[in-house]
Length: 301
Image (cartoon, rainbow, N blue to C red; front, side, top):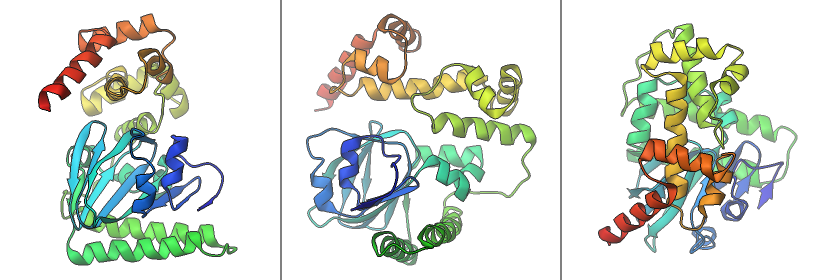
C-alpha cells in the first residue's frame, strides 16, 4: 500500500483496509483487507464514499442504518459517518472510492447540487446502475488505481485530478436518472446556505456556536441565521443542532465508547453539559438513551 501525507480516514486502524490513500482520496478493493476489521467495530470515515458492488451481496451499516447491496448497486455516503460491514457473501466483489470533503468541493459534485438532491441521496443512498454504467465506473476505477499504485510519475497528481473530474461529470449524468437536477441560478443567499451546510457536514467534532461558522464564511452570525431562515425555514443554530444530534445518536449507540469518551469526542466541556444537551433533545439522560437503544436492538433479535 502506498500513501502520501495524511488521509482523511480518521480511524487509524481503518487505514489498514485501503489499497491506497493520500490527503485527497482512498481506494479499497480487497475482501482480505476487510476481514482485518472483523470484530473491531465500525470505521469512522470523514469522506465522500462511492461503494460499487460488482458481484455477490453485502450489507453495510452506515450510521446505524443497514444498506443491502447486490450486483451493480452503488452506495453513496457523505462525510463523517460510522461504517461497518455486517454481512458479505463469499463471492463478493466490489470497488470503493473515498474522497475528502475539501477535494470534493474542488471537484464540484454534490456541493453544486440542490439542497433537495442532497437530502434525497441521504435518504436513498443506493443507486442501481445499468450494466454499461457499472462497467464505466470500473473503467475509471481501474485506470485510477493503476495510476496511483504504479510507478510515481511527475504529473501523477494532475493526471488523477483529470480522471476524477471526468468521472464526476459521468456520475452527474447517471445521477440525473434518479434525481431531477434542474439547472438554475442560485441567489447569493442560497450559495451561502449551501456553503454553511457543507462546512458543518465536513467538520468533526461540530462546533455548536453560530459565530464559529459565520467567522469562516466572513459574515456576521445574525446575517447567517437570517439567510438560513429564509432558505430553509430553520435558523443557523437549528441546523447546527440537527447535525450535532445525529453525531450524538451515532456515538451513544457505540457500546465500545464510554459516555465520557463520547462527550470528549464531541467537544463538550464536561459530562454535566453533555447530559443537559442530551436531555434537551432526547428527553432522557445519555445513559438512559443508550440503554433504550440496547433494549430496542435486543427486542429486534
